Length: 244
Image 1 (cartoon, rainbow, N blue to C red):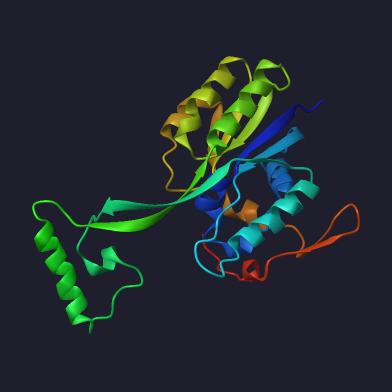
Image 2: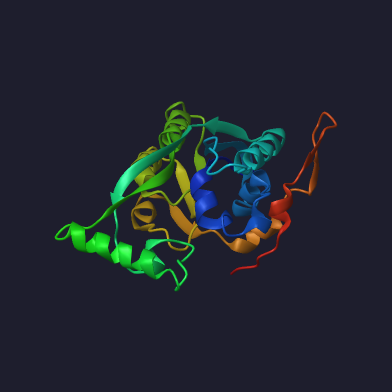
């Protein structure tokens, strides 16, 4: 008889680690992905932890695309647990005066006065460095929510096996507590560049997410809901940018 596992997905970490640069993979079937990652076990409940994104600029449709995707996930049986998404403007010190590292897109070479003004700002600020006001976008609460749901299921005795998709080392301690209660915890890290040392030492096992699993677990472009509705994949997600 196959064991049963619950899945706990750090949505923002999954997006930043594997999906942001692969629009053709964003219409991801989370249930299918979890089953592919644990083929020798039966899938119980799936929790997806995220936050409603805010617009970055006038006409930004990211929040609409996210809402469409979350509707599909809910219809497929995924429990969405929402945190908060913050958009703050803060002053921060510059790290470099090289124009390629100072602003993107890079300033044109013929903008001599602008380049001179930037260098003048650095000179005036010495021995300190100049500051600039930047927009900080950040998700709040998802890591705490994931840890809380995971530990609640553990201490209620609801699970003996868990799949956690995250590269957030802040979750190392709740994962360690989960394992110490006799629960097998498999961690899947979405991004190659994410430091997973503490997660690896806390989990029962840890692997990197295979991009092919993302490509092989996609919803149909036109998703039919159980009630007969039709949800269309966002157009911008149809673009194909293959990457290893």
